[in-house]
Image (cartoon, rainbow, N blue to C red):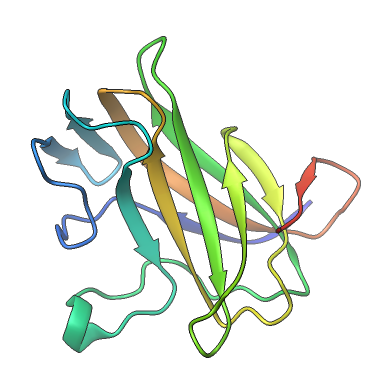
Length: 155
């Protein structure tokens, strides 16, 4: 069973996107084609934030506020050609912007719980060796029944 559910899209803000040599086609809010043949693996392609400083970043938060007492499931809707790979990283921060933990996501569906002292977090989409992909959306939902799914603990 799941509780609240949030849908996250790839917005057209370029300040949080890897642009060097990239071709990005915003066909629809749930259909973004990204292509870059020169980007090395391990490069952060896109970032989403739960808390921003608007004067500095010029973007609004796109992630929901979550707490360390609940469990969550993240589902990443992305298509990449066979042989291409992606990964995502959730990075949790305390109120002093010190990293409080992280979770690496390699599967389309992953359950996680953030540290209790989490004040904000960010989600990074990372190149795992792909040159082209189609991004649809990310779903974050609260898990209320702990009998299903595999949990990834923060380290």
